[in-house]
Length: 98
Picture 1 (cartoon, rainbow, N blue to C red):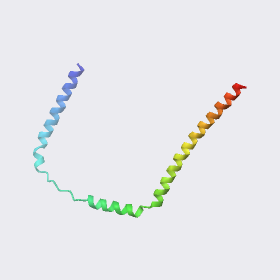
Picture 2 (cartoon, one colour; picture 1 turned 180 degrees about the vertical axis):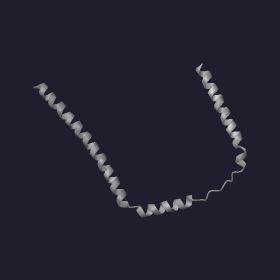
Picture 3 (tube, one colour; picture 1 turned 90 degrees about the vertical axis):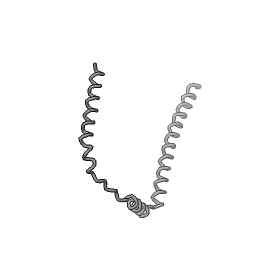
Picture 4 (tube, rainbow, N blue to C red; picture 1 turned 135 degrees about the vertical axis):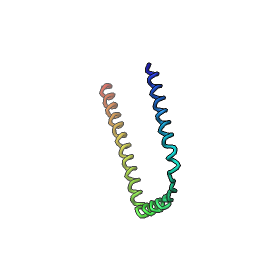
């Protein structure tokens, strides 16, 4: 029953789209297509100019080294956690032996 309702809705909507398409088809002959102006070259030149004006090796190096520092600190933190765990385990083992 549900499939029948879905099929009916599909057929009705397809017919509706077909009717709209055929009503708009004669109007498509009247539409004038205006070729787009090549703005892409102008945009590319402007972007290159902005990049050259704002480009700084110092900024790039600073970002690179700050990210390296963050990675090193994260690794250092993980190593610290592992060391604390190992110290705790060795302390527990010494207490068991005594």
